[in-house]
Length: 96
Image (cartoon, rainbow, N blue to C red; front, side, top):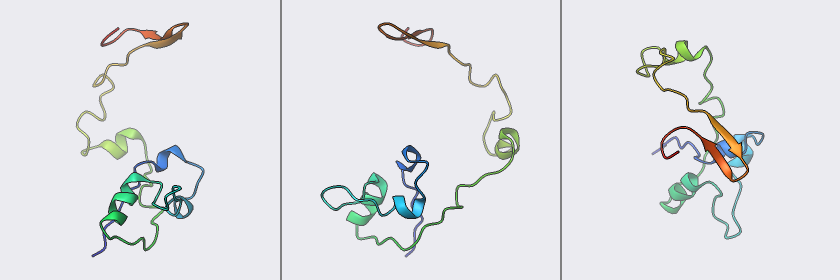
């Protein structure tokens, strides 16, 4: 069986090619990425990378059209102002 696995922590290392990232190991020898590690614990073997699998082109409206409800509505998710203060984050919004 072949199953595509999207590494969950890869976004933290944007400059590392996926071919390099997928081979990174922790001190105990297991995969750095928790999702790759989970699959390997279950017996999976890495075969190859698919670096172009998450490439999307177009505007947000074009990519989201018909796939993400409200993707074209700019008022769908109101933004909250957040500023850094001396004691940490301050601003308006839930819990503020």
